[in-house]
Amino acid sequence: MSAAKSLLRLREDAKSCQRCDLWRTGTQTVFGEGPARAEILLIGEQPGDMEDIQGRPFVGPAGRLLDHALAEAGIDRKRVYLTNVVKHFKWTPRGKRRLHSKPNQGEITACRFWLDAELAAVKPRIIVCLGATAAQALLGKSFRVTQHRGEPVPSPLAPLVLATVHPSSLLRAPDPETRRTERARFVRDLAAARKLLE
Ligand code: URA
Image (cartoon, rainbow, N blue to C red):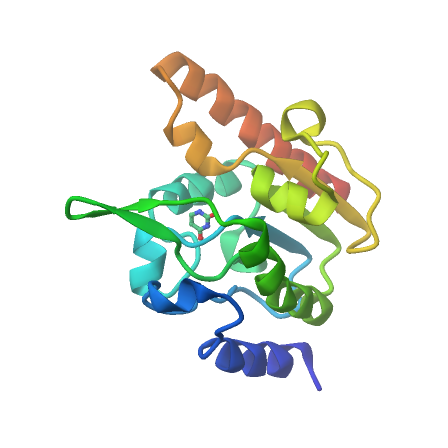
């Protein structure tokens, strides 16, 4: 079966996923998206509030930041496959708002089925893990993004695997100066990933 067909089938099957309990509170499964034969595959943690509503990954504030950073790094979002370690939004109520809540190991393990299937279909040349949840799910619990960001890490998952921070961490930067410098580092990490493909 072609990669595009397998992804279509997976996306369809994932709609009714009940491998963990997050389907009970999430609006819908937010499956990965992008070209079936993308050379670069980016992995985030889980969909946020907007992603949950729209059913697409990285369409909220972190996604907008990611889009701009990718463009600055010379990467066209349309040529990248974007997905998440966990495919339902996990949240806790705070008044009328739904606050992001970190997925636990059981949820990450249950959802790994889909991620592994996406990786097997897309067969990217490079995987970029965005943030600690993705990096530790793929590279092991002891992996520290702060120590090894932007460095290629040997992995059976793809010829090149590296990790950088999650774009939402930039949105939480304590002041504009930190945000500017951290954003520039993030763009540099993405550009380094692109250069590895040359
Ligand atoms: N954060 C993520 O990790 N993934 C998304 O899709 C959106 C925000």
